[in-house]
Image (cartoon, rainbow over all chains, first blue to last red; front, side, top):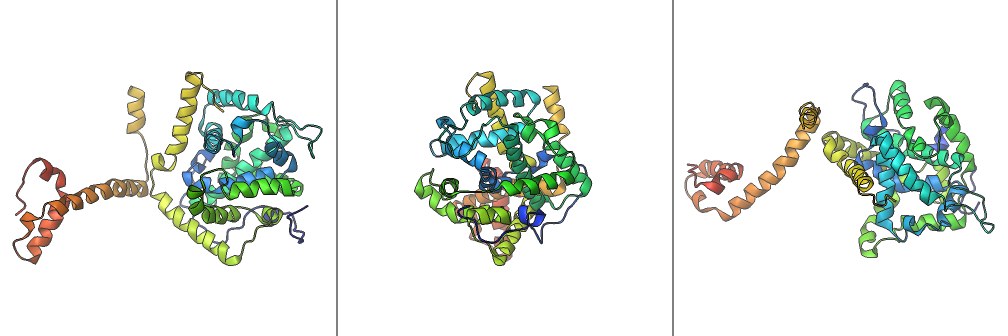
Length: 297
Length: 74
């Protein structure tokens, strides 16, 4: 396991999820859904989420070896960004019709993502277990960012939030019975799934290129690199930091928490059309593309 | 059409969000007011200090009126 630190971590919630010591207070105990987690700040956790998803070798090699150029982040970075965020918008904010249309489009790309005899690991993009893992990563990303922005949920809210996020997987081939039935059971699934985390040199190099923003104009990328690195490492649980070989410290953790307490305060004053306007525009673009029979992905 | 109207009219926002919206609308308004003031200083050069402050603030706040008419602030 190249790139991994020598320390063997206990794979429980403290190793597999980010630990936040001080976060914004919860203002209400009203019922919640995952739609409230779509505030644009949440995309700060995007790169960390990609690392988590690709940390399963089957997903990592599926993406690194993919022959689908139209979805290649290094060849079409802005398009890849659009389609990725559109998937989230469709899965969380969309109607069943939106989801069916997007599934058809993603399926047509996924059909080409299959391991060959030369692949170091066997994979198939239609593997429901792999898709469940990716969906679980997306859920963890939404839950982490939502609680940083709005405070820790009550157990009832956590359950409602979890249940409403299942479309992250069921929009593709994941079935409802694949999701652990309760939020508590999800922790068991997640901790178990973290045992399969293993980032080898090939996938690691790919992820570091992504983190260094090699796909966009260097002049544009330069000022964002340190911030992206900080945010990404902050959103990675210890097991992923170890696998990537990136460092983190107590003082950075405090900075990270301070940053998000400030962001959370600002965010409370922003009306929803600012916080989530981008996602609704992306969703509107999906609907327009469907109406005009243009390609979604 | 009616349902869109109903949607807009029944849209809920928290007080914090209303404050934020007001600030976001208020900042450009103030910026234009200050810009307006920078090019229309003739009327400020008389009177005492208190009078001048009232004139300056009044000009920043009422730039839309001053755009269309030469209202007298004194």
